[in-house]
Length: 311
Image (cartoon, rainbow, N blue to C red; front, side, top):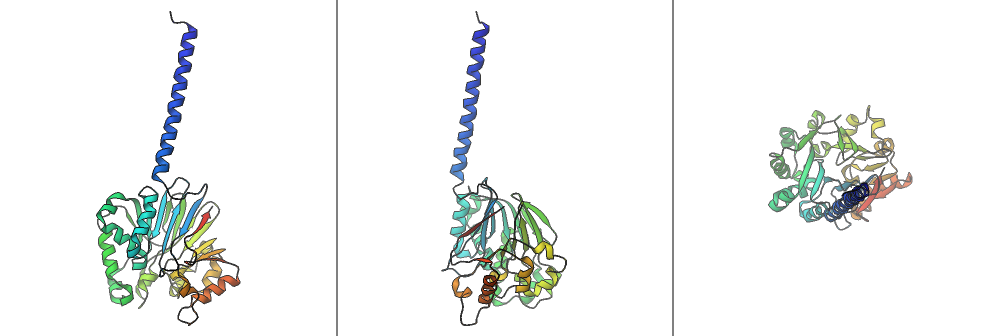
């Protein structure tokens, strides 16, 4: 005869088993997560990392990671460095939530092109969204110089042609990137077509990523001739706690532009031979002096990788 006491004990046993199964499932999920995500993750906010090295030429490669291990890749740098980019993606479970390609120059999208050309890597890596600037091909073909290496663009164009996860960005566009607000302030437009030089640089994505309390402005390779179109009406939008300097901090944007941004830290994607040049070939040392005088922290390839936690 089954008594109330027996039923109560049976109920307790069932509840305990359910709890144990729940805890087991929790720890199993945690174990699987720790197995798939080996890279650093912040306890809060977003971890932004600048990659490079004092033995490397100027290039642009950043990642952004949230506490859940969601990964954003910005550019990726030279094609020869693609194994390093692939290793970072591997550490986050071969999953890229968003890949932002600022423009198709080799020191920005070369690694992306190389990774996508490797069948094994292309199969392994899952990319949810790719964000790119528009490229006015006819204008670019007329203005491209030898240093543009326009074949890189053609390879990039071929690579993304059959992808259904590509978004072409324009000024004024806004997106949610792993919880960050992405505001596109400048992209390739008709103004860029009028330039005889630097179209690919000036057509770069210039965008701002904002968390709850802080923001970072990415200027990619935009140069000073674009300021006349970017600054008017955007003075408040350009203000940011952190800034990635235009064109690696060399022959890029003016100090008047950075006065508007008013950052407390600046990222210059160049090695020491550019930032500490004494021959007058580069103007980057002038920007270094400007930031030092205003008390702005400088992050460069000298100590890369460099990280900040965006709140």
